[in-house]
Image (tube, rainbow, N blue to C red; front, side):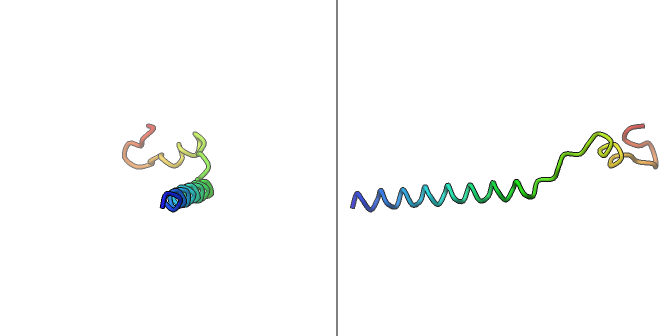
Length: 54
């Protein structure tokens, strides 16, 4: 009985580690590169009534 509890605990820990590894590796692939200041400026510039950086 004790061996079965240990086996289940080891399998659970292994599955949890595999899940964390897979989710972290998928997040790395979807992360966008950081925007430069010029890109941020152009993205947030409003030509209409009183822009953000006016």
